[in-house]
Structures are given as C-alpha cells and as structure tokens.
View 1 (cartoon, rainbow, N blue to C red):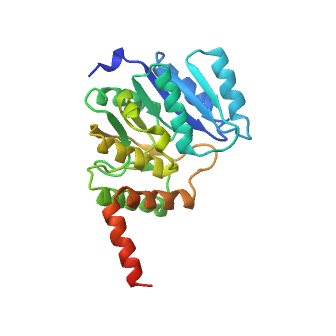
View 2: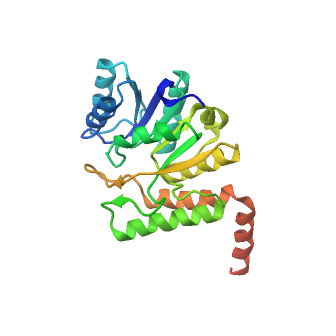
View 3: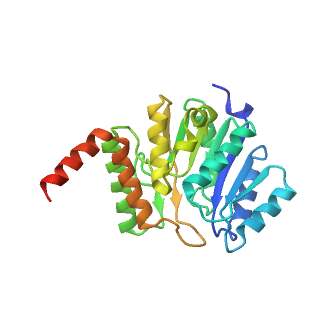
Length: 250
C-alpha cells in the first residue's frame, strides 16, 4: 500500500444547520494537516451554513463546496461528496461530522491505520466504551444496536454505526455508490457490509466520541429503525426466518 504521507486526502463533511461549527472545524483540520482537502456538502441549511462554506471555498482552494437544494439525507450527501473526491483524484477519503463530536486530532491515527487497511473505522466501543456527554439511555441504545448488528452480520466490528471513517479509494470504486439508498446509521452499516462483501480489509481504531457542542442531534427514531431493518435485509436467510415466524404469531 502507498504510505500515508504520499497520498491525496479528502475529508467529506455533510452539513445541515452547522453555521456555528463549520468554519471552526475546517480551520482546525487544515491547521493540523495543511495538505488535506475538505468537501462540505450542505443541504440548503436555513441557518446559512452554505453561505459560510461557500465563502471558505472561495478563499481557500483546499475547501470545496457542494450545494444541494434541499435536505436529501445523510447517505446521499456522503455519496455526492465521495464522488467529487474520487473525481479529484483522492487516495484516501474521510467522512466526519462538523459538530466536533469527531476530534480532528485522531486523523493522524487514521492515516497510520490506513497503511494496513482499506476501511478504518473510528470506534466508540472497541476495548471499552468511549462516549462523553450522552445520557445512559442513548448510550445503551447505541451499544445494543451495534451488538445486534454485529451478531446478525457475524463480523468482528464493534461499531458498525460509527460516522468517523477513512476509505481507500479502491473501496469506493468497488462499491456501487448509486445503488445505496440507506441513510443515517443504516448508511454506515450498509457501507461496512459492502466493504466486507467485496473482500476489503476493515479495522477499527479507538476514538473518544463527544456529544456535539452546538446545535441539536439530527438522528431521528425513523433513522434508527431503518438501520435495524437494513441489517436484516443484508442478511437474507435471517430475514426469511423472521418472516416465517411472523406468520406463526398472527
């Protein structure tokens, strides 16, 4: 594999109402890694996030901006960002949040890990629990959901729903990005499943996940249920068993 210091790195950051965060997160990333490029994908945020991001892109050639006319979902935002990164010749493509729940200081750890893996996941649950600022109920739901997915998929991953990741371009080229329809947590599960399915190497590295400093969470109950249902769809034999059992209890 190509050593990390020789590669072209792009970070895809989807945004919706992140005007209070986007300029700060971009500055912090580029302060640590001046050679990186950042793609901001904004879904026409009412708070003016797109205006801020577009202004940044005009001032700095390392910042790229995708404006989408309406809120179209996290999954498609990542796909649009991935496609632009690939078109610009990216070797490594990150995904991360704008709200500082993903600390840019971990980017160097991802770079090191990417030398021996095709997909690197920043895990909240490997070798313990590393989450700060969540209520116990939310933490329990997240942990149990990931245990459920890992059990169904029969894959050695502790954090299927993690949104802090690094893909080698070969992974995104090998996956049919236009065929992905899932969103939120389900998008992360589907991408992990497809990486395994295509024979790519997947590893986790530990990170500390912090609850967002500003704004509100965009994860809804619908997104959680979509993630759980997608897991069953990816594993057809188990889905068939559940369908048959449902007939017995009608």
